[in-house]
Amino acid sequence: MKTTYIKTLVMIALIAVFSCNEPRTVVTDIVHPDGSVTRRIEIKNSENNFPMSDLQVPFDDTWIIKDSLEIGRNGDTTFVKRAEKLFENVTLLNETYRTDKGVNRGVNRHAKFTKRFKWFNTEYRFEESVDKLISFGYPLSDFLNKQELDFFYSPASLNDYRKSGPDSLKYKALEDTTNKKTDIWLYKNVVSEWIGLFSGLVGNRAGKDLTYESLKSKEDLFLKIVKENDNKFDSLWGTGQILREFIGEKNAVSYKTEADSAMKIMEKTMFIDFKGYSQCITMPGRLMSTNGFPDSTHMLLWPVNSDYFVSEPYSMWAESKTTNTWAWAVTGLFLAFVAAGLILKTVRK
Image (cartoon, rainbow, N blue to C red; front, side, top):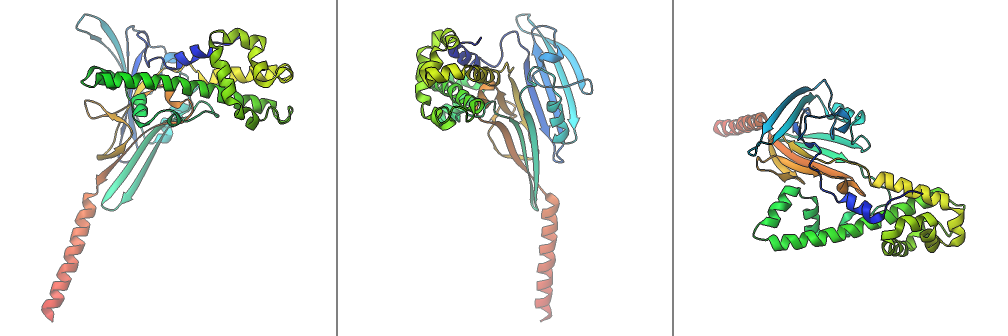
């Protein structure tokens, strides 16, 4: 079996969103009151090279596409590709994800729009979601407290600002503890996902020894074995030593094929080659609630990293409302009519 060290996998999962040579992509969804969405995509690259197979978010020749370049203060050139399209509804927007042939095509992404009429106001909710990668993982909230979760999900630019501000020591310490706890979380997910996949492949053939419940009861033992042998995990797994230590000699020999298959599936699904980007949303009317981060232009911003949807769906949502002026006018006229009727009735008496 050819696998990689667990520690290397963890490090890959924690790499920053963009490397210097990858396109930097910002997706902006402008939500309209009728449920239509104008999507704008801006891609910047140090090279004039935008192959469709490398795009983080899909678009095609039905979009309005413009190319330009920007010259920085130091004379460096940035090539920019912008694409825009109006979608009549989120169903059509989701169709672009379904037919995506770009680099992130293996991840399930979808948008949802709801609208509620409440006479005086109309409320809107728009959501972009990414489905989770694994089935047997742990929620990150089991490992990070509220402050650490906020730091983990915050845009890199915001965290960089925090670490250079007056509370820099506090945020540098917060970053350190968050990274350490996140490492543990990823290790636990690796072990838990393998156990779930392996027990499913084995089924009832091994009796009670290799049921999901039995293996989960020994999960901490497996985690300890993995972490202690991290630097030589590849060779020890290949020889079956780690497996024998966890499930015993007889089971390790009988179910080596299933164990290797579960490891390959886990690696393929959990450690995908996902290229991150930034998601922006603007809502109709007045913003009421969101889990996003307003940027300098008051637009809502979310980073989209594979770390965020390992074991839980990643949801980027915003809620807003508009005032129904006509409803206030109709209500006012109605109340005025009722008041006039009461006054007239009183006068006649």
